[in-house]
Structure formats: structure tokens, C-alpha cells
Image (tube, rainbow, N blue to C red; front, side, top):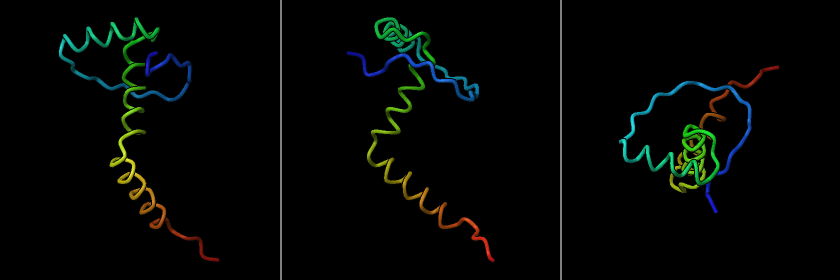
Length: 78
């Protein structure tokens, strides 16, 4: 069973150019075919989400930065 699956989410997209080794690109394309992913970019988006969600050390750093940002928000004075 593939770790990544096709999605049809519509959201704002920003272009990003990535240079890959040709052998790696061929493996990504093969994975996409096997997993019924329409395009390699779908693989990239889901792979990025997977890493960001599952890297425990990153999650700690991210959560700390979000908490810091929340404490730095200006408070309304009445």
C-alpha cells in the first residue's frame, strides 16, 4: 500500500523549481505510476507534508516557534 495517495485539494499554489538527479526522478515517476499519483509534484507535496508531520524534532521546534509568535502578538488595549 502506498504511503502517498492522490488528492484533489484546491489551494493556492506557488511555483518551485527543484533539480533532481535523473535516477531519483525516474524512481519518483515510477512510484507515481504505481501509486496512481497524477504528477510528480503531487508526490513532492505529500512527501514534504509527511516529513514535516512525522519528524518529531522538527515538530518540537515548529511548536516552540508558533508559541513564541503567539506571545509576540500585540494585545488590544481597551
